[in-house]
Length: 425
Ligand code: HMG
Image 1 (cartoon, rainbow, N blue to C red):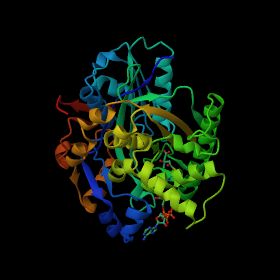
Image 2 (tube, helix red, strand yellow):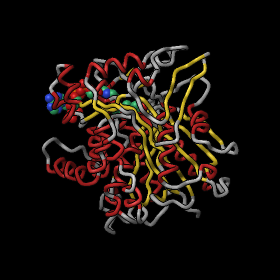
Image 3 (spheres, rainbow, N blue to C red):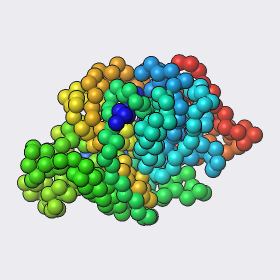
Image 4 (cartoon, protein in one colour):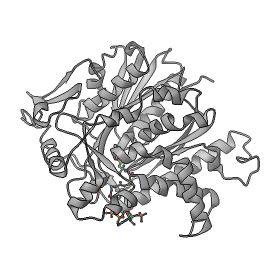
């Protein structure tokens, strides 16, 4: 069977961020709620000149350049986003132009809340596996700006950014397990964004239970598929061992860091067929296991916030750079969730040299170029960004906000979005 996997991975984030302790103080909330209760430290804040197109193109450009891939090799570009910039025109076609991709290339956008990019990744994998790619690669980009509104319960779980992945038959980072996947779909009203609103509507606590139900559903299906397609006898050779232990690391969709902890506990409970009681030895063991196999890959999520479709892949990027050298040849799990809802559980094997390739363009260097802003400036940016898609608006002037990114959104003139790009990155 043909090998398919991840050959390149990079990301882009807005120039500005806030510290969540500052936000907590401004909102009169105990900072411990945001930092320890939700597990977040910082939050990326976009300006009117940064939109899902500029972030997606920024991430795509980095993935191509950092991994030395000729844009002419790309035969498929899929952008997963729930921050649509037009009811008809997709983000992907602007990205196609900004990256100079060939015309003999399919380009489209996928929307299903945070699941869009995971769906794109599966589609790209199947395209290559089918043989139709004929040696070409697929560029899958997750790009979003998460907005719940000032002073809302969701406010500390906002964020913005994009992750770009290049999928090919000669991967350097991960090889996907194309035989085993677990899916889950169910119509639920946990989170959505009506056409008239730039901000999401969310039933926060219900969304957590929908996420956990979808996680259990897709994990159980993956597990059944895996067991029926192999002579699996348990991780350590006996059928009583925990199935989850076959993964060196477990990566989840991360709307906020604490959610990944709840998710990991839920899978350990699913393997044990019981719910752990607070303070029980099983609960303590679940926390230790989370600290060993999940938490080390969550720094980027804690410092960027929820980037919706890309949140799982931020965690993957963090894992590959920091921890994959200890996991070479081992499987890791990936769980994608999109509200509404759709979920997918899949796995991949870490390839030799992945960590050193990722370290050549460390995510910490990109983070170190950001600028910390205060809460009044953050509030001004949020209010101005709400005007950014209006025709002939004046708010999209980079000099107004001191934005110096190589790819910029300059507003909409004559109902047409305007972008500018310089060659530096
Ligand atoms: P909330 O009601 O303000 O917070 O909203 P809370 O009262 O539930 O507190 C949060 C945690 O902080 C709790 O921990 C508290 O105990 C703790 P837990 O019990 O859950 O372990 N806490 C403290 N800890 C330390 N010191 C303190 C303190 N005070 C409280 N002083 C909520 C929280 C997440 C609901 C809200 O921010 C929200 O609505 N966020 C948006 C929705 C969301 O992120 N949902 C996640 C699942 S759905 C999903 O992932 C899909 C999504 O990404 C979108 C998509 O698919 O497109 C959102």
